[in-house]
Image (cartoon, rainbow, N blue to C red; front, side, top):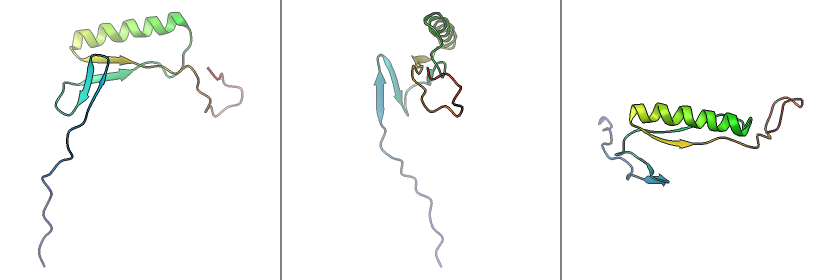
Length: 81
């Protein structure tokens, strides 16, 4: 009985650009981050500023993402926003 051989082939490289940030197997690390729920305009700007400063220091790309409508809450008394 022959032993199965491991495949050395990889899926073709896919590339996705969000603004000037590129996600790709050959590109440098980039981060998609932000709060799970939109709390307020000021909170969004504070978080975006902190993430921009951090990723700037690390030399990595950033795509800021937050949700304005989280309808899938587990508690009926939780905020929807």
